[in-house]
Image (cartoon, rainbow, N blue to C red; front, side):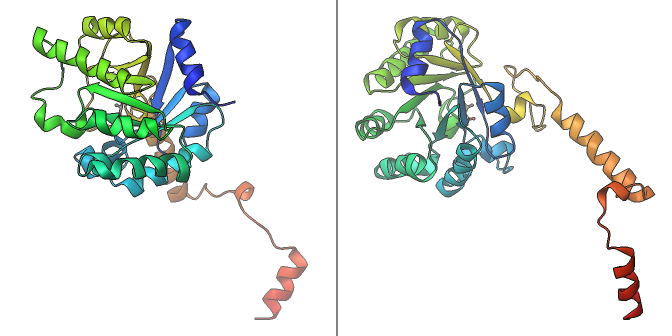
Amino acid sequence: MRQTVPSITEMKKKKQKITMLTAYDFSFAPILDAAGIDIILVGDSMANVVLGMESTTEISLDEMVMHSRAVVRGTERAMVVGDMPYCSCQVDPELALPAARRFTEEAGCQAVKIEWFENTIAVTGRIVQSGIPVMGHIGFTPQTADKLGGIVQGKDIETARRLVEQAKAFEEAGCFSIVLECVPWQIAEVITGILGIPTIGIGAGAGCDGQVLVLNDMLGLFKRFKPKFVKIFADIYGASLDGIRSYIDEVKNGTFPSEEERFSMKADEFEKFRNSL
Ligand code: KIV
């Protein structure tokens, strides 16, 4: 049985921490599912960590939907949330509802996530009213990073109050949860206490109702930079490097493939073949 909006909401009420990670494909999604993750976000961070783009604003809706579909195929238990890319809502808000429908109907996601921008609340309201659950995202919002003037958001009274207003506005618009990215832990705690819906923090301290990290960061796969809030839980980069180096060595010295990894033709059949040449 998949996690649902009611089951995630219930976790906040029972003070059970919500776990969320990103995933982008059929290789990792089943591992997250088997480990018991509650929510998988097919984040537009895929632009950076999978596709090597400089900005998340470069990724297309087609790319996001294709990868979301692969994640849904690889999961049975986790709720899968598709991240609405910049082009699907900020360029023309009229495109947002059809885009959200592609995530649920074509990819099979259970919800979508929307970053804060000037028309967020109108867009969120429309999507929620159509029956699609929405997760909000405030604080550091990479799609509008150029307008934010820094990474950590809400460090003074005015900007902290703005975050509280944004969080409340998302809740009033019908969001079932909200991501708080790069927010002082004290402000994240206040917002978590005010809202009835769960907060999921990334760089927002331990007081949120749940936590999210980018999978490729926490597995040590993304080497371009390491944000302060990232903890590396496994060195998959190192393990992959060792494995690939062993493969290269064994191919070069002739120990791979061995008899174990080859196919044979019956000796008499091979003899006949040889004679036929
Ligand atoms: O795209 C993403 O991975 C995200 C998370 C950092 C919350 O939005």
